[in-house]
Amino acid sequence: MNAQTAVRDVHARFEGRTGLSGLEFDDIEKGNRLVRIIYVSSVTDRLYTILNQCISEINSEEEYHVTLKQRARDFIINGPESRLLLKVLSESQNINQHSFSDDFFDRYTPSVTGAEAQIISAANHIVTGRRGAGKSMLLLYCFRRRQRENLPNAWIDLQMFSGRIDEQAVSDAITEILYRIDFPANASDEVVELRHRFESGNLTISELRKFTPKLRRLFEKVSSNTNLFIYLDDLHVFPAAYQHSLMDILYSIARGNRVYLKISAIENLVKTYDNATQSGLQIPQDAQKLGLDYNLTNPDKAAKHIEAILDSHAAYSGLPSIRRLCSSADVLPRLTWVSAGVPRDGMNLFSQSMLKAASENKKRVTVSNVNMAASDNLSIKIRDLQTDASESAIRLNDLLEKIRNFCVIENKTNAFLVEIKSGEDHFKDIMSLVQLRLLHVISEGITPKEAGTKFMAFILDYGLYTGVRAAASVELFNKQTAPVSAKDLRKLKILRA
Image (cartoon, rainbow, N blue to C red; front, top):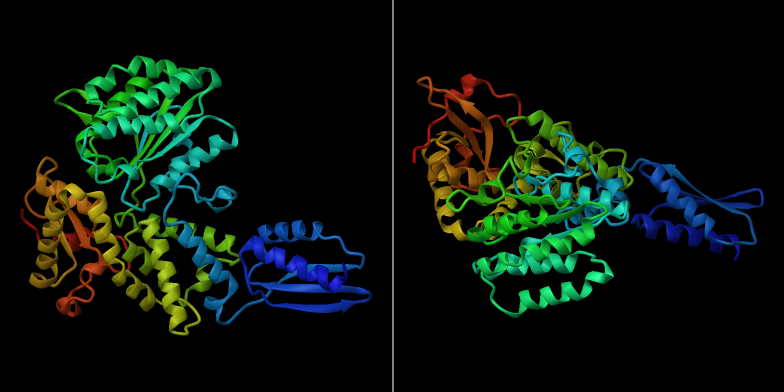
């Protein structure tokens, strides 16, 4: 292989493995040696490692060399690194057990609260937060850590049960777990028999409970020497009437058996314990709760977390930082505000903002691009409402429209107060809209009038008032995500049930 063919081969392999396509380069002669210089926006350890691997795989009779050099680009929004970043952000939108199988830890951003140390411990956990808060990612962190050490895991994506309302869903979920666990050979006949029994008929929950002792002994064959972790992703889409029953059976199998449950859920849409029957999984007695919501009550933390996530993906894509793609220092604070501190929304909105900037032939993302992307994002959240809260979607939609009229039409504002009445359905429904990212908490407790009466402060999602005829006169509350004063909060109007 001659030198010219060798450098072309190295270059092609480098682009294929990094995902950076169309990189500029120069070929120069240094003595008898051909040198190819590949230009990237940022020379990182990851890129150098991949390049050296590619070089080591090529055998050439002639001397050659391939190296990297940093080069700034005016229209970086259209560069190879930005194209890769769009792909990376897209892949990060929907996490499952197969996500980032080869380079998970290179792309993972730790949680603000250090929840990683807790999730890997031998305990039951339920990870809560709004859709897109990073619940599945935290479960995947635990899954990958144990996978790296060849420890037993079983991941069940409960999305497959979305829309089900039948009791059979409980035995189907147990069956799915039996398929996901790597049982020893001496248990294979027993596993096949149980799976066949559960799949062959409509087992009631009472009938299913009779198999608990047998299931305990079966699981013990996996967990006798080391802990078994079972991951239940998105419990909130499992039939609401039977969530506590599923938890009760699994806890009966797991307790004292070195089997631990790692669950993700939207908190207001799950019922892990039923007081009437005293069955299920109680929090915090039976499982610890790990909350991942960094909402607009802590805008600084939310902003830093979203920027850290975007920086991690930017570095993986060969960019020095995410700010390199921003036209001003105002872009990321605005992104935090319109995404309300939800990491997945932040990633999605930034990628959409990049596309808008590129289509307008801009060099970098502007605040206007972020605003437009947030306005377009409402339809996605309404769709999520139909999926995550299917049994109460009509009621929640009606309440959302009432709140929008109260704020935008009647009071020309995007913020309001609601009295905290945790036991009442009206307040529970408002908190469900928060979990669905259609409303956002800006203060968890304010006393605007008589002592002893506490109110919570909210703002509408940005998409709920942009594009509305009356929106031009709406007074935006705290659009710079600065700490909110009690004086300003007390001026907000109170929404009554």
